[in-house]
Each structure stands twice: as structure tokens, then as C-alpha cells.
Length: 502
Ligand SMILES: Cc1cc2nc3c(=O)[nH]c(=O)nc-3n(C[C@H](O)[C@H](O)[C@H](O)COP(=O)(O)OP(=O)(O)OC[C@H]3O[C@@H](n4cnc5c(N)ncnc54)[C@H](O)[C@@H]3O)c2cc1C
Image (tube, rainbow, N blue to C red; front, side):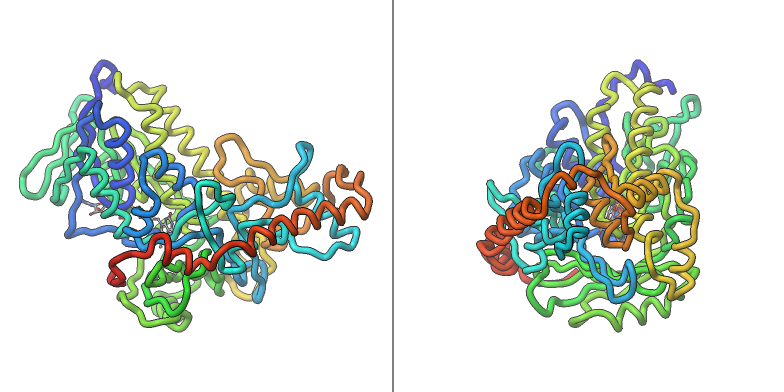
């Protein structure tokens, strides 16, 4: 690597999907005075066009960029998301919600679910979700936000409109957008780094640092730099998805629905005027034709787009940063959309780059640090997703029998073992999913702990009753004061433009 003494000031972003424009927005707003930023995209190639459910840290990112929430929600026809309802996952007919909320009140020695488990043993009949505000708000179809709102939430948004919104934002902050198809990635013979991108019309875009946001292909990181791919399909067998959009038939729910079927699952993402639907499946167990038919027979409302098959391979690039190229978004890898983590990983990827930005030149230690952090983060997300497939009572199809019996990563096996034995769940340093998430999904998938922490045993029956009652009545007070989600959307951020075209 021969960049050590080179100043990095010209950044070229290849690709203008959600990844490209998130990178452009963040870099231009926060480092725009130090950098010259160009983004190249091709309308002819287009974007993947999916990715419409998000998770709460996106709000922090928007705040950091000074994005006005109402303007953003109006522009992207966004609705609120309080979690995901998982149907038919633990077994057919089952349903649980993984909400963004906190369960009850924890003690420093052990989390709330230990108290809940002890309460159950004492004969108190309740679900863990009865102690979570966000979950109860979601179940009632309610929502509101304000400066003092106690709700932890995210958004459902229109992916195309979000890219457009971020493009306007980025161009306002000085990003130069070039329309054109990248024909060739030109590398330096001596260093192996990328010197420039050659466009189809002959223009040459030179840069010091390149961010590959070209989608699954990874035009720079994979095709030019030949960075290997770590395949995770032995743990995440779904490899295709068919998305289709439908016109909304009723009020938007404040949560995503994830409905398992015999060879994967189906999503329903409610926006202001339309619903994003899609069937995720393993091509080993379900044909494209059957997937299409299954999807179309399980949607509500008139379809407004043509369903099309998207193929993918779950996994990650072995190096997210190689030479002077950093891969973001689908170019860097794909876990799978079950917990809506991809947009979040784009945000953390660009944030990490800004924290480690190689102003003084690229050094191996910077690159190693970036790659190590990216790998750790992704592997933990992967484990959380694999949990949903592996811990299940379903054995009604070959797909589920495979998922149930497959070998899982040691890191996940350890977590499952700890929870089964002692109800112990934890969030590692830098890990995205909190204890509340692990607990909701492990219990929701049917993992029953054999023991729990003894601390709650210090409570007598009456103390436990009062403790639980206090939490539940606090929650119901807040829930009853909230408006319906639809009512909130209409008042707060209904798009002027009600058209539902893709
Ligand atoms: C089925 C499915 C469902 C998903 N659901 C979610 C979800 O609910 N939540 C979530 O967070 N994420 C989700 N994702 C992931 C999410 O869609 C992506 O992370 C996000 O859209 C970012 O995509 P991207 O920008 O990396 O790639 P793309 O959208 O594919 O953009 C690639 C860009 O590169 C450009 N490009 C490519 N080649 C060239 C070339 N030769 N010359 C010039 N330009 C070029 C294209 O024109 C385009 O602008 C989902 C993904 C899939 C597959």
C-alpha cells in the first residue's frame, strides 16, 4: 500500500442506491469542507428497489445530519415501525412481536425476564410482552412521537423516495452527481489501488478514495479488486426474494409483519398509501414459479408493480476495505432482510469510515481496524438472524427440518446454551441487538429456560404482584393516551403527493 504519505481529499462514490446516497449525505454534511465528493450512478442500471423497513438507530443518524423528521417522513411516505410481528415461526399458528422496547424494569444483577419467569412460576399468568410499552402500543395500532416521547421506534419508508431525498440533501451539501455507466475500474500498476473509473462515454473519474456502492455485483471491491466472499448460506439458506407492491387497503400498522411459510417467509411493510410485500425463500426448497404464486395468493389489495425475482447469496466480503476502496451496502455483503439490518449497516459503515478517515493516508492498521470492526458487527447480526431459523418447533417441511438440525456458529450455540440453562442473555460491546431483542426472540421462538437468576426469589408473592402491576398500569396509562397510528400520520407527515407509483 503506497498511500501512506498521500493526502486523501477526493472521494468517489460508485452507485446511487440507498448505500451511495447515505454515504454521500453523511460525508458531505460532516466532512464536506474537507473533501471533494463525486457520486456516479446509472439510471439505466437502476437500484435494487427494496429495503423499506428500518431500525431505530436511523433516527440518531438523521439527527446527526440535522434532517427534519416531518420533512423526511413526508418525502418518503414513511410510517412508524415499533417492531416486527413474527407469525408461524416458532410453530404454525404462533405469533410473537420483537419490539424495539425495553421489557419491564431490570436490576443490575439480572434483567427483567428473570423476574417474569419467577412470576410465572408463582402462578402469575402473563406474557413478557405485557411489560413492554412499544409492544403494547403496536398491538393497539397506536403511535405518536414528540420531543419527550418515550417510544423507541423506526420507520417504514419508500426506498426510491429515500434515495431521492438523500440525493437532494447531498447535492445541497456540495456532492457532484454524475450520470453514467462505469465501464472499467482502472488500477495503479504499482500499488494495485484504484486510480479512476472509466465511464461508458469516455469520461474518467479519478479519486483518492473510492466507496463501492454498486450493489450485489461489487464492481470495485469484487470485480476489480477480487476481494473474496465468505458464504453464509449453510446457516442462512434463503437465497431469493420476490417483491411486489400493493395499494393499501386500510390503516397502516405501526409494525412490520414477517410471516413464515414452508420454505422461508413473507414480509409486509405498510407505507402511507401502499404496502411493500415480498416472499423470501430458499431456491433449494421452492421454485420461482411456486414462490410467485404463493406471494400473489397471500397479498391484499391491487398490485402496482410487477413481481420479479432477486437472487442473492448471504455472506460478507472478506475485506470491507481493500487498498483505497471501501464497500458499503450490498456491495459489502448481505445478511438477509429478516431484521431490517442492511440500511443500518450502511450507516455504521460510513460512520466508522468517518471516525477512521484516512486524511493523512491509508495505513494497514486503519484498514485492519475497519475490517475487524465490520466483521465483528456483521457476525453478531448474522447470529441473531440464524437464531430465528434454528430455534423452532417447526418440522413440517424439509426446509424447517434442515434449519432445526443444521450446525450453527459456535458463538450462537453458546448464547442459546446460556439462555436455555440460566435464562442469561447479553449484549456484547459494539453489538447492535440488545438483551431485550435476544430475549424476545429466544422466548418467541419457543426456547424455554430451565433456570433463572435467584434474585427474584427474594420477592414474596405480594411484592411480585405489586411490582408487575405497577409496570403494567404505567404502560396502559401511556397507551390509552396515544392516538391511532393512522391518525398520527395524517396529522404529522402525510405526503402531499398521494400517488402510489413505485
Ligand atoms: C429482498 C430484499 C429485501 C430487503 N429489505 C430490507 C429492509 O427491509 N431493510 C433494510 O435495511 N434493508 C433491506 N434490504 C437491503 C437494502 O435493499 C439495501 O441494503 C439497500 O437498498 C442498499 O442497496 P445498495 O445501495 O447497496 O445497492 P443498489 O440499490 O443495488 O444500488 C446500486 C447502485 O449502483 C449503481 N451501479 C451499479 N453498477 C453500475 C455501473 N456499472 N455504473 C454506474 N452505476 C452502477 C446502480 O445504478 C445503483 O445506483 C433488502 C434487500 C433485499 C435483496
